[in-house]
Image 1: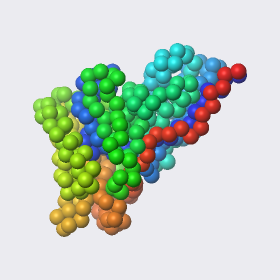
Image 2: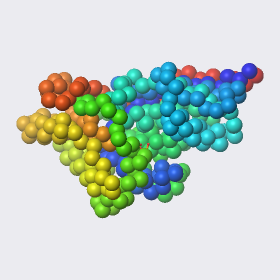
Image 3: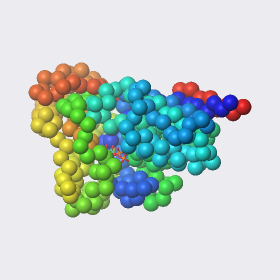
Image 4: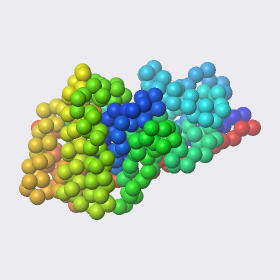
Length: 331
Ligand code: DP6
């Protein structure tokens, strides 16, 4: 009997300095380094079971069979794991988020971090954090940043083995809160993978990438010093630069809705009135409003009053990806 199974859990992350565009699409080597925070309240839990009786990989999401495209992406990723382990056994993968899947929270980060850990453990590989982050990166770039805990930096590099993420400060370092204002529950029209491939068609991408290292250093210093004013300035600048690239690529990608813009305006007004708060958006209309935990309740209440905000999810920093259970038994 073969029992090669493991369950792992990982948090999604929100990027403060964004990943947008690849220098190598197959290896998912990013155009620039990025920096993020894991979201401790949200997580994906994934079980992988390698089973010699299977004729192909199977994927279920919250108990329902996944769409063929999703299964194909997971299967392609499992090929990498099989290659590393010298195995040719197919697997059953069951995955579940504790956050609403229609809420537009980028779940590929937690999904591929949890999958990388569960699959490698189930097949009997022991990977250190660096190797695991590197592996998760091949599934989804941002997943590399969901492997280490807390505040995380992912280095851009020309070689596969040099591009991985590491923690710059643990979750306990700074009680930042991400108040996620949900303004749409629709799935995004252009996914990140397609978006990355368009980045280079924008005349602004080269300038964005050129300045990314300096912004990352400013952001890292602001986090280390818990300097919210400096943090707010660089996070919004970096978000605007990425969206400027998106809007000016060919075809252009426009992710904002009127309610996203209303929240941006409100956040700027609150900041002018002395509340430490700023925002960032990924490849979608929902808006991540960041503030120290002390003002999070007030910010959440105020967000709920804005027309078009459907609801607000809140999260502080989270820890690393971790194994929940493991059984490697070949008899
Ligand atoms: C806008 O990691 O989702 O959220 O590698 O194709 O899966 P793939 O892309 P993904 O891209 C994330 C883009 C972003 C910015 C960020 O998280 O840095």
